Length: 290
Image 1 (cartoon, rainbow, N blue to C red):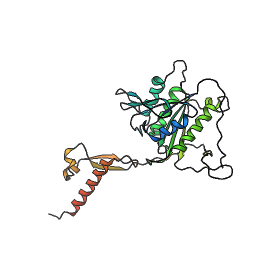
Image 2: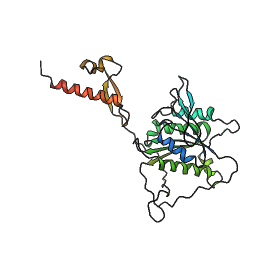
Image 3: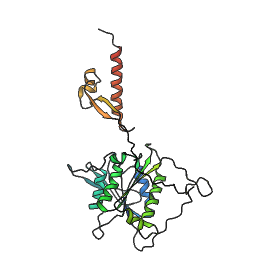
Image 4: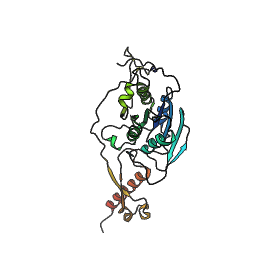
């Protein structure tokens, strides 16, 4: 069983606290980002650059066709924060933060660690290819020779608690930046990405085998798996077609195929359209033959 957590000692360097950049793909208002900023702020100066709206499953896409905006925002615990609009992707946010918003001309490495998350939902197996969370951490590792730490919670619940995942992330960053190894861990991990997935509910125990919130969450290093979500495709009426909005049989012949890849992909309008389509098919079956 893991032992009770102790405060991570500092390497004893004088001067201001070290800086950590936080990005994500769920958007700047996501509870996972807010939780990890608060957790990191206990030991570091935290800076935030995140999409203004959710950009999940953006992979490593970057925006080259339209201007990107950066608006100052207040995020509890953050020294400075920006919400990026104009279709900014997670990789865009990491790039913009490192090259422009928080660039430090006196130090080419303004951030030694860039945290991405905490993401809503796991990023295991081949999901790392599609993940905007992992891509933002990867961009930081590529562009700034930083350590990218992508953190995801294995829960899609809107009311999920991110506190234990945020605390685990802070512990990892403290080990990298404040450990008593004279920077050996940091040097070994530069330019690399740690993809951390945290169970939705984690029970920890102290040395006396008693449940304790202060006990450390156990960690295990693993290889990337080969699992991948299989998309379920659903045909629905084309919402841009006026004749399809009335639910007529003719309108239902013009369908738009959408993916129901995750539980939240299909919005209310799509569900309503599928329901109308289903009801129309049932009504057609009940019609008496001519």
